[in-house]
Image (cartoon, rainbow, N blue to C red; front, top):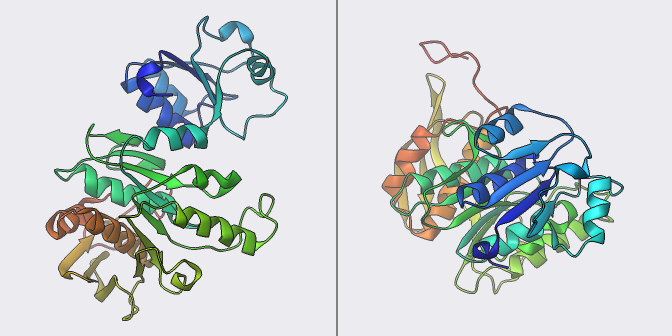
Amino acid sequence: MSIKDLHSVVFLGIGGIGMSALARYLNQQKVSVSGYDRTPSPLTAEMENEGIRIWYDDDLEQLPKSIDLVIYTPAIPHQLNTLVTLQSRNIPLMKRAEFLGKLVSENDCLAVAGTHGKTTTSAILGHILYQSSVGCTAFIGGIVNNYHNNYFSSHSGPFVVEADEFDHSLLHLFPKIAAINSMDADHLDIYENQNALIETYQNFARQIAADGCLIVKKGLETKFDKSIKTWTVSLHHPDSDFHTTKLRVENGVYHFDIQTPQGIINDVVFGGVGAINVHNAVTASAMALCYGISPSDIKTQLATFAGVHRRLEFHIKTDNGAY
């Protein structure tokens, strides 16, 4: 199913951070978008202001007369009357992850996976690409402060997405470049144990394009097939392919160099907070560099990155840089 074939799409759970980004994208593509969510929120209010019709009761009367596709989140209760009714009709239904996979298969996909760091890393990567001459369309699992949005697009370049391990969602993606930040035990209601989770990440890595590459946290590379072109990332491990040197804080701001296989990106100033986000920035830089973004663009946009709402976010910062 191509986007060009869609005229009316209904989202069940439209207020979710991942669902809303897709709804905004389709709305921008001139598709008639509407949806249900249990409670209103600032995010649903923004979508309504953008022309997306949303209702908050399990009311079949709210459904449009013509529906080409229903996209739903696994968070929606199976007994929801609207979902049960739509399942009984001859209307295509897709989980959010399945639709995302089909959508991004139409172009290059840069995907960030891992138990931690997906949202911030993908936000940094999206910001770098969006501000470059390449551009991108980014679906982010948080509100990026630079754009006050979880979706932004230049209508050119690759897709930037989060590869979520929940419900095996990441296996719907076949990326050009992928990063795996961590593989800690999580979602053990979905996976029998950590080994089953790791196996899913391994299967995801096998879906990377033959001419693509995997960016992985140093120490995890031994878990993946040697046939996959792999680069390692760390904060400052000298044996990793991408890492910082001269890492320091001046007036509350991180400064460092990034060592890469192609050379050093000197005198980087990073707008984010915390050493973990420096690591995320190095991962995003590695992905961008592998996609062909210039070191100068990477350096410029790391300095202008304003963070993600509610993730190590500045609330008070004095003139001397203290916070």
